[in-house]
Image (tube, rainbow, N blue to C red; front, side, top):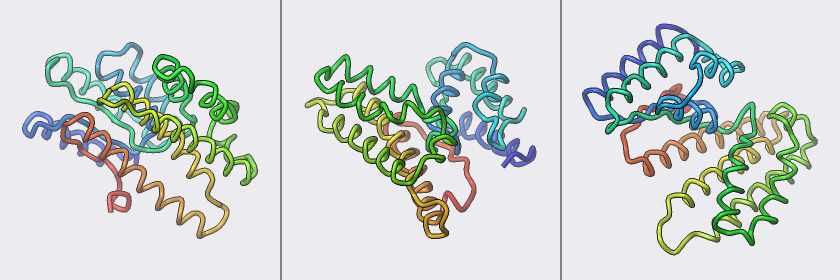
Length: 234
């Protein structure tokens, strides 16, 4: 995961694909929210990139200078090509954070466009919001984790039922933001202390990473380099 040679090769391949083949996104097995923060940086966001990488990836093998170098190159490319921006996406569940800005984003959309729905959405997210991170979440009893997953699914379904008659970009992104904590809660609800539970969780994990990557490609419209191990891609 964190070896210099593999990641340097990935960056070189990505740079070639961007410059010669019209690719537009780098997709990596990091959380959806981390991807959003990296995407904001490479498109001109504020902050020190090394601090950003360390904060987001401290619990992963990717807290490396190679990652910093990739993001700096992407940002420099965007500075030179404002009409042909490259983007970063994280296709994973939300870990170690639960994605609090996703809750904020969904509730903000509901407040603006479907205010009558807000009390029901906030009530379902409230128990998850009270858990600080994924480790705390996993420390809760299995029955509680299954109930949290149920509530996250209900919040997603409530929003999905309000799909506008005509396509609306804000709704599309709000629904994807609601989908992410729902999937995170689902994988945390598996019985991870058993071999079968771990197997099913890992199958679900690969499927959600594939689904997130496909969603990104469909809704941004560009070609995507998917950076992942063969087992995940398979």
